[in-house]
Length: 231
Image (cartoon, rainbow, N blue to C red):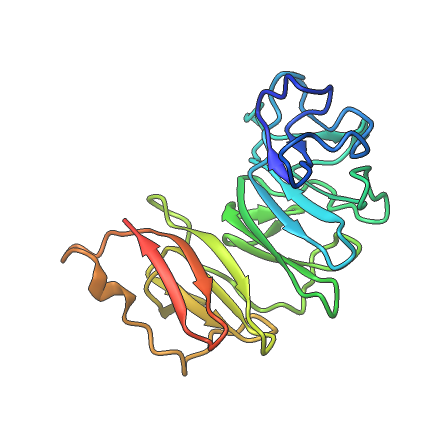
């Protein structure tokens, strides 16, 4: 998949699939793609590939933000949608009002089909959710997921989520606490969203004395170690 803000190659808006040689896959997404009220603006900011080669896409949110998508292929889908392997909308997934802020990343549990969504939001489907929400395969919020996330203020948010091989979740971004407990920029969560306090986090030592920093990306190595990059 490739995120395209101005796709002049085909009529598809904001996402496309490329062949190994870099050419557009003409069989993918035969309809219009993501749309906002202003059809020239509807950016996609996050993508997750599903076990069946379908995808979940997310965008910015907020009622005053015209750059998030409100429709996909002319069906109402606000800030998040699931697509079939051919790029067409999967009508079995509907997240209703979606997020009220930008979705930065999405990760999927291949066993259960549940998805974790993270970003700069305080509400998801009208419910209080601080930068993180778990969605069921239907797209509805999974209320059994206990993460309350970091308090959103001064740019604080979760930017990255990774699923680990043992079923736990790794989250990273710009925060100093998680679920009300001190956790600097990187945290590991149990399958149900509780903070794993056995995870010794020393990421805060990488930043200046004022403790201001942001993790931009994290990669999980096969042996369980992590690579992180920050600013």
